[in-house]
Image (spheres, rainbow, N blue to C red):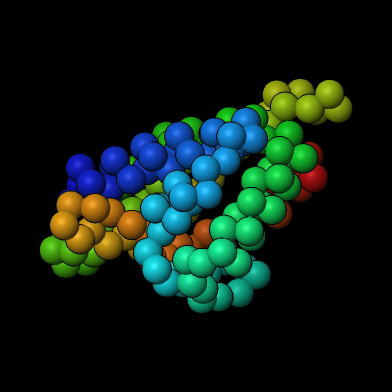
Amino acid sequence: MEQAVRKLFERYESFFNRSLANEIDKDAIAELYASEFIAASPAGVMTGKNDEQFVEAMLKGYNHYRAIGTKHMRVRGIGLSPIDDLHCVAHVAWTATYVRDDLPETAIDFDVHYLVQVLDGDAKVFGWVSGDEQALLKQHGVI
């Protein structure tokens, strides 16, 4: 399980950085996520389907990240909390780097906790829990 989850987040990190460079592969978005998912943050809890509407929302998200100066995302570490033989929580430590003319290069560390399912050796995200991204960005002067 651990190897499949680490491979998933290597792909996730690579995909995120390609998207920041405006090299978006819509199929790659879908490959990272299960057919349905749940997400929780201070904004609330939502459920969704891995469909065209989800892909469009992700594309808007990457446009927003580019607009606020996000240049790079890096996985600093991954910790796993197994649930059973097929599921775990992946505690992923990220560093986001922001660069703009009006902002010195700024690196922000944050964590996201992903619910992951591994079927036939293939890991997919079926949920995530994140902190208050907007407050963190405001705290560091990014927004």
